[in-house]
Image (tube, rainbow, N blue to C red; front, side, top):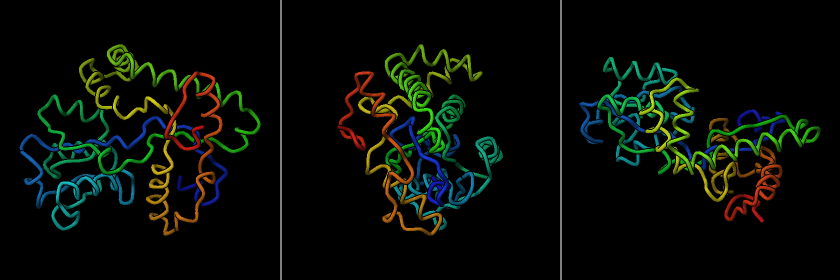
Length: 245
């Protein structure tokens, strides 16, 4: 998204989730949001989607980032986990698999970012030339991913078994993570996004670059035409998504 906003010939063609997926998880000794006051929350880096989600979740919990809770930039999820384990941070916004793993160790999920950061998430982008020169490749790729998403929604236990094997997770962690993600996969518009969601995404991305999202057309950063064509071929009639017809 930042690259496309700067003029790179890239287009988003697919989003795995209809909203962000971060889980605000806290150490076992933190009973609730009131215990976060004066504590640190580990984030990946300033201005990242992880940082943005953490700020919005803290505000939703009645805590002002920087005043009531410190945001500690530590890096990737492993570094954030170490920060919590060493008591440098009381919590962090983490991915569902990490949250599922920590949940087995007594950590608590206070909330998920879908409530406050409803932007299309985990997107895939391609070069504009590829869309024009090899549309069949794009369509085959989209068809495979949509089938996978529908399979996960309809068969969470079986999907979790595949995840456990391929990602080297324990079966329990894989199933917990799958169940956290299931509500975030759109049943009506798998792979797609709403105009409001993308506008919000543009707003956050442009603000980090000092730009004006209101002047950016969605077509500058995304091409939904291949997805809509594949959905129609698969008998999927999206309703409220961007350019659903």
